[in-house]
Image (cartoon, rainbow, N blue to C red; front, side, top):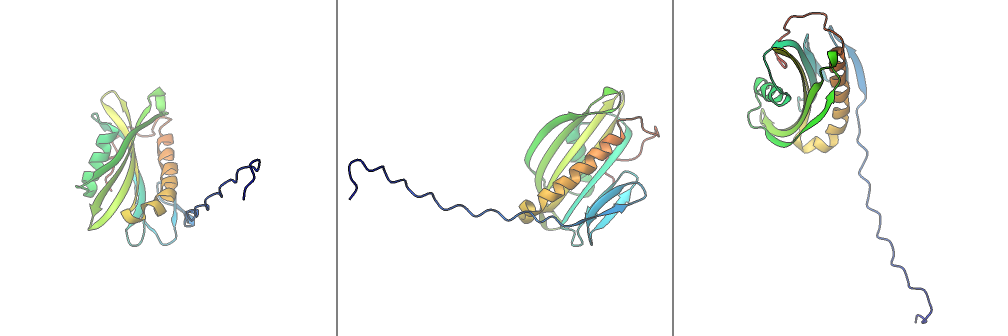
Length: 196
């Protein structure tokens, strides 16, 4: 029996929770295209145009991409750019998980890039998928420049794949915007923000 002056017995610490397994990022292989350079896992496919590049898994259940347009006439917002891109690729049932304004990005002539990030779920060719898009718009006079990037995968594998896809996309999106911190070489319209 415990004596009156014995120190109280401390309860045992609860057992430590098992740690989540580390995210397994595939080895990325650098590719050089006609217009852009990018990295992607072995066996992945790509589609490159003068406006950007998409990379995607052989089963087409995961992918990422970026595209840009300079000197497009009219006015738009980053959210409208994402909406337009969804329409172009046939996403009609998007359910937004979250949307937020990001800090402005540096732009040529002191005109900032307005940035928005949207996370949403949707169905594509019968697959339940999830996608995160980041769109940027730099407006001037009667026109604008726009850049949009995304990464997407099967919704059930989002926690597993989205981490390394996000890092891949962020680097490509920054590179595209950085290209326009100096005057563009051409002043002509170069197509829709996401014509792929």
